[in-house]
Image 1 (cartoon, rainbow, N blue to C red):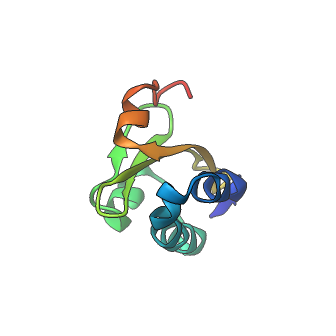
Image 2 (image 1 turned 90 degrees about the vertical axis):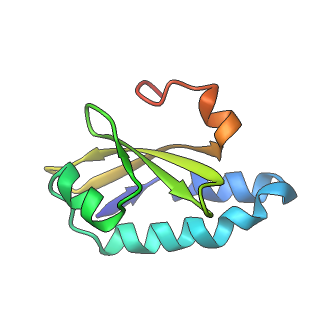
Amino acid sequence: MRIIALSTLKAFWDGSPAYLDAREPGLAWYRSACRANWSTPVDVKAAFRNASILKDGRVVFNLAGNKYRLVVWINYPYRVVYIRFIGTHAQYDAINAQTI
């Protein structure tokens, strides 16, 4: 898969010392997603059992032992993953994952 906006992840963990513990789990997710070949949401669930599949290609991943949430939009035909949001559960609760 091609991942768009790795800079969103970097900005999150570099933006505050409190979020530095998201770096390694975020990079692990990134490396795994780059090697993936997801053509359907079922493929995503097979790779990440705790992923939450939303409608219209949105997926929510839990990172760092469920401490952080990562929201992506996947364009399955083109094999592109767009990073839309990363944050704590409290930050995630303040957004609409379907529209961000």
